[in-house]
Length: 109
Ligand code: 2BA
Image (tube, rainbow, N blue to C red; front, side, top):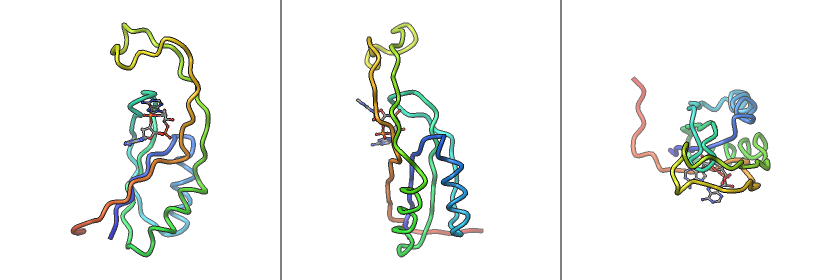
Protein backbone atom coordinates (compact mmCIF):
# COMPACT_ATOMS: atom_id res chain seq x y z
CA UNK A 1 0.00 0.00 0.00
CA UNK A 2 1.12 3.59 -0.68
CA UNK A 3 0.35 7.01 0.72
CA UNK A 4 0.16 9.67 -1.96
CA UNK A 5 0.64 13.17 -0.55
CA UNK A 6 -0.34 15.88 -3.03
CA UNK A 7 0.03 19.62 -2.42
CA UNK A 8 -2.31 21.46 -4.79
CA UNK A 9 -3.58 24.98 -5.25
CA UNK A 10 -6.84 25.80 -3.45
CA UNK A 11 -8.43 26.60 -6.85
CA UNK A 12 -7.98 22.97 -7.93
CA UNK A 13 -8.87 21.26 -4.68
CA UNK A 14 -12.63 20.87 -5.23
CA UNK A 15 -12.13 19.48 -8.73
CA UNK A 16 -9.53 16.99 -7.46
CA UNK A 17 -11.73 15.94 -4.53
CA UNK A 18 -14.71 15.38 -6.86
CA UNK A 19 -12.64 13.39 -9.37
CA UNK A 20 -11.24 11.16 -6.61
CA UNK A 21 -14.75 10.47 -5.27
CA UNK A 22 -15.99 9.70 -8.81
CA UNK A 23 -13.29 7.03 -9.12
CA UNK A 24 -14.05 5.67 -5.65
CA UNK A 25 -10.68 6.71 -4.23
CA UNK A 26 -10.62 7.83 -0.61
CA UNK A 27 -8.75 10.90 0.49
CA UNK A 28 -8.32 13.40 3.32
CA UNK A 29 -7.97 17.12 2.61
CA UNK A 30 -5.83 19.27 4.88
CA UNK A 31 -5.57 23.04 4.79
CA UNK A 32 -1.91 23.94 4.33
CA UNK A 33 0.33 26.94 3.68
CA UNK A 34 3.18 27.18 1.19
CA UNK A 35 6.50 27.95 2.84
CA UNK A 36 7.57 30.32 0.07
CA UNK A 37 4.43 32.27 -0.89
CA UNK A 38 2.82 31.99 2.58
CA UNK A 39 -0.41 31.42 0.64
CA UNK A 40 -3.04 28.82 1.42
CA UNK A 41 -2.91 25.55 -0.48
CA UNK A 42 -4.47 22.13 0.04
CA UNK A 43 -2.72 18.89 0.93
CA UNK A 44 -4.41 15.60 0.04
CA UNK A 45 -3.58 12.35 1.86
CA UNK A 46 -4.59 9.47 -0.38
CA UNK A 47 -4.08 5.89 0.80
CA UNK A 48 -4.27 3.36 -2.04
CA UNK A 49 -3.22 -0.12 -3.09
CA UNK A 50 -0.02 -0.11 -5.17
CA UNK A 51 -1.80 -0.86 -8.45
CA UNK A 52 -3.92 2.32 -8.08
CA UNK A 53 -1.01 4.76 -7.73
CA UNK A 54 -0.75 5.44 -11.46
CA UNK A 55 -4.48 6.08 -11.69
CA UNK A 56 -4.28 8.52 -8.78
CA UNK A 57 -1.38 10.30 -10.51
CA UNK A 58 -3.47 10.66 -13.68
CA UNK A 59 -6.42 12.05 -11.74
CA UNK A 60 -4.16 14.59 -10.00
CA UNK A 61 -2.54 15.55 -13.31
CA UNK A 62 -5.82 16.20 -15.08
CA UNK A 63 -7.39 18.03 -12.10
CA UNK A 64 -4.60 20.49 -11.33
CA UNK A 65 -3.02 23.09 -13.54
CA UNK A 66 0.03 25.31 -13.20
CA UNK A 67 -0.53 29.05 -12.82
CA UNK A 68 1.70 32.07 -12.67
CA UNK A 69 1.56 34.03 -9.46
CA UNK A 70 3.15 37.37 -8.69
CA UNK A 71 4.98 37.59 -5.39
CA UNK A 72 4.59 41.18 -4.21
CA UNK A 73 7.34 42.76 -2.14
CA UNK A 74 6.70 42.23 1.54
CA UNK A 75 7.68 44.52 4.34
CA UNK A 76 10.69 43.14 6.21
CA UNK A 77 8.79 44.19 9.35
CA UNK A 78 6.16 41.51 8.70
CA UNK A 79 8.50 38.76 7.59
CA UNK A 80 11.94 37.44 8.37
CA UNK A 81 14.83 38.92 6.37
CA UNK A 82 15.48 35.46 4.88
CA UNK A 83 12.14 35.49 3.06
CA UNK A 84 12.20 39.21 2.19
CA UNK A 85 11.76 39.83 -1.55
CA UNK A 86 12.41 43.51 -2.40
CA UNK A 87 10.70 43.49 -5.87
CA UNK A 88 7.72 41.66 -7.50
CA UNK A 89 8.63 38.34 -9.09
CA UNK A 90 6.61 35.84 -11.14
CA UNK A 91 6.63 32.24 -9.96
CA UNK A 92 4.96 29.27 -11.60
CA UNK A 93 2.92 27.36 -9.01
CA UNK A 94 1.76 23.77 -9.40
CA UNK A 95 -0.13 21.89 -10.96
CA UNK A 96 0.71 19.64 -8.00
CA UNK A 97 3.64 18.58 -5.84
CA UNK A 98 3.30 14.87 -5.19
CA UNK A 99 5.10 12.48 -2.82
CA UNK A 100 4.53 8.70 -2.82
CA UNK A 101 5.42 6.83 0.40
CA UNK A 102 5.40 3.16 1.31
CA UNK A 103 2.90 2.31 4.04
CA UNK A 104 4.22 -0.16 6.61
CA UNK A 105 0.83 -0.94 8.13
CA UNK A 106 -2.75 0.19 7.57
CA UNK A 107 -5.59 -0.38 10.05
CA UNK A 108 -9.10 0.95 10.43
CA UNK A 109 -10.86 0.35 13.72
P1 2BA B 1 5.18 27.50 -1.83
O1 2BA B 1 6.30 27.07 -0.94
O2 2BA B 1 4.41 28.70 -1.42
O3 2BA B 1 5.84 27.76 -3.27
C1 2BA B 1 5.08 28.31 -4.34
C2 2BA B 1 5.92 28.38 -5.60
O4 2BA B 1 7.00 29.29 -5.40
C3 2BA B 1 6.58 27.04 -5.99
O5 2BA B 1 5.67 26.29 -6.76
C4 2BA B 1 7.81 27.49 -6.75
O6 2BA B 1 7.49 27.81 -8.11
C5 2BA B 1 8.18 28.80 -6.06
N1 2BA B 1 9.21 28.61 -5.04
C6 2BA B 1 9.15 27.89 -3.91
N2 2BA B 1 10.28 27.99 -3.20
C7 2BA B 1 11.08 28.81 -3.91
C8 2BA B 1 12.41 29.31 -3.71
N3 2BA B 1 13.12 28.99 -2.61
N4 2BA B 1 12.91 30.13 -4.67
C9 2BA B 1 12.21 30.45 -5.76
N5 2BA B 1 10.96 30.02 -6.01
C10 2BA B 1 10.41 29.19 -5.10
P2 2BA B 1 5.66 24.71 -6.63
O7 2BA B 1 7.07 24.18 -6.73
O8 2BA B 1 4.68 24.20 -7.63
O9 2BA B 1 5.17 24.38 -5.15
C11 2BA B 1 3.82 24.59 -4.76
C12 2BA B 1 3.66 24.30 -3.28
O10 2BA B 1 3.95 22.92 -3.08
C13 2BA B 1 4.64 25.04 -2.38
O11 2BA B 1 4.14 26.32 -2.06
C14 2BA B 1 4.70 24.12 -1.16
O12 2BA B 1 3.54 24.31 -0.35
C15 2BA B 1 4.61 22.74 -1.80
N6 2BA B 1 5.94 22.16 -2.03
C16 2BA B 1 6.70 22.30 -3.13
N7 2BA B 1 7.84 21.61 -3.03
C17 2BA B 1 7.81 21.03 -1.82
C18 2BA B 1 8.71 20.17 -1.11
N8 2BA B 1 9.91 19.77 -1.63
N9 2BA B 1 8.37 19.75 0.13
C19 2BA B 1 7.19 20.15 0.68
N10 2BA B 1 6.27 20.94 0.05
C20 2BA B 1 6.60 21.38 -1.18
